[in-house]
Amino acid sequence: MKITGLKPVLVNGGYINWVFVRVETDVPGLIGWGESSLEWKTNAVAGAIRDLEPLVLGQDPTRIERLWQLMHRGAFYRGGIVVASAMSGIDQACWDILGKSLNQPVYRLLGGAVRDRVRLYGHLTGDGIPRAKSQTLGEIAQASLVDGLTALKCGPSRMNRPMEGAAAVKASVAEIAEIRRAIGDGVDLMVDLHGRCSPALSVEIGKALEGLGLLFLEEPCLPYSVSGMKKVADQVRIPIAAGERLATRWEFEPLIASRAVEVLQPDPSHCGGISEARRIAALAETHYMSMAFHNPLSHINTQACLHLGMATPNFLIQEVIQRHHSWRYEVVGPALEIKDGYAHPGDRPGLGVEVNEAECAKHPPIETRQPEAVLVDGSVTDW
Image (cartoon, rainbow, N blue to C red; front, top):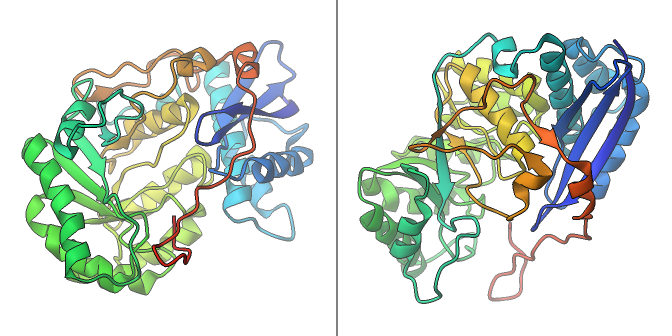
């Protein structure tokens, strides 16, 4: 079997464009699909996919590890998050092809199921669930717990300066406390600071949140500073999570080795695909760390995450977009079925997704721009 074609398919997914990868083979009717979506980097990722095409054309798509090494090491310059995202979609598509060629779902090819179903968590915003402007944070949180979800992630509503006084810290903590009161202790709650705080401020906010029983505190500060993350982990009695911005095991290794995190969040569309997510998970397992794969993207990446969750021993919980667009599953189906807060990737061959390119064409990509993150004094902060 050989790869005969590689095509990025761009779709307007709303706040970002989705970048799908179609990998064609010389076997009639056998194609694979993956996702390389990288927020606000549509053109760069699509270009990187085209740059990788000469390396993979004519190659056997079922020799997945060799293809990964070829893409990663086959050029003088090794890529960062953009090239890793391009690789990720190709890698996912090759797993899809392998599963289809063997008539097996991907999770069985990853060693088989280690659990019966995958636990999910949603977001405070409810991902498009209609709500009245007069609703309180507590009411929004309750409305976000659809489909039997028993875990929810939220974050402070304001941008933070590198350091804040007592009033700002209390205001942010009060929002989280209101959400906790509304959903009760029976729902696991996670807080994402989105890397907007300095390590010192992260410690201050983290300590103030300690009594709320959080499952984890995500990106309290930017993960590029291992010493900063370590400072927070050492001083805050909440498990620290990070990883959505990182690519390949080499960027995760310093956080793991320093014990700066307890929960790793690689994104299979960013980190190097299913293959690399597995390696990161194995590295984390040797340090008794948990995995919560990052996933705010389309149903292709959701399925990749579910297959990983089924086959990863140290998996914790899976991020999922509960609702987005009414046409979401017309572009990529079949629809995700959530029952009692859990889901299963299904036993369809490969990733188990069907991409309707005619529907994709109805939602052409748009020129996206990352929203500005500006403080009250007009200075730029981390988004």
